[in-house]
Each structure stands twice: as structure tokens, then as C-alpha cells.
Amino acid sequence: MAIRRSRTEIVTAVTGGSGATNCFRRRNVSASGSSDGVGSGVAHYQYRVSKDHGVTWGVTTSGSVAKLTTSGVYVVQFQAVDNVGLLSAWAPATPVTANTVCIR
Image (tube, rainbow, N blue to C red; front, side, top):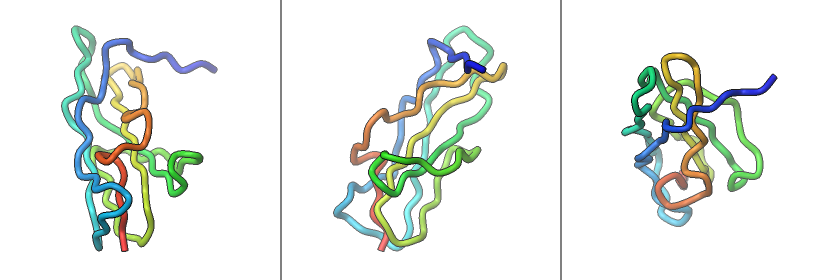
């Protein structure tokens, strides 16, 4: 079964990352600013977390904030879901400072 994706829905801001070298005891990474153009509107966000720099991903979790507390280096991606269930692309598409976190 194919998943239909909205063409106008995008995640515009992912914040909270620190890169792989600045470590913290806990850190929140969050998404905001998605737009659905003139569509049905954004209903919510979901995120996924990778422990191997984006090679594999954990389960998709509903929410706009990923709360990281366990030791390791993580990459977090977010996806917006509109009111009719269309999904944006995962963002950021690749690991960058904004979505990479080191927890010690």
C-alpha cells in the first residue's frame, strides 16, 4: 500500500540539537513551523530516532518533542501529519547539528 504525501507540507524548524561533540545529561529536540499551504492544516508531528547516524531508525512516535536522556549520540527526524493524514518528508533529510544530540 502506498503512502500519499502532501506536496506543500514541510517541517521548517528543528531545534535543540548540539552536534555529536557537545554532550549533555538530557536534551530535547523539537519541531515547529510546518505549513500545509491551503490544505487541511497540520494536525501533529511525529519523530523517529537513530542511534547509528541515520542508517537505521527506531519506531515512529507521535509528538513534536523528542526527550533524550540515555547516553549515546542520536539523530532525530520529524514529520508533519495534516488533518487528512498526508505526511511530509522526514526532516532534516540528513544529520546536521540541529538534529544531532550527544547524551552522556
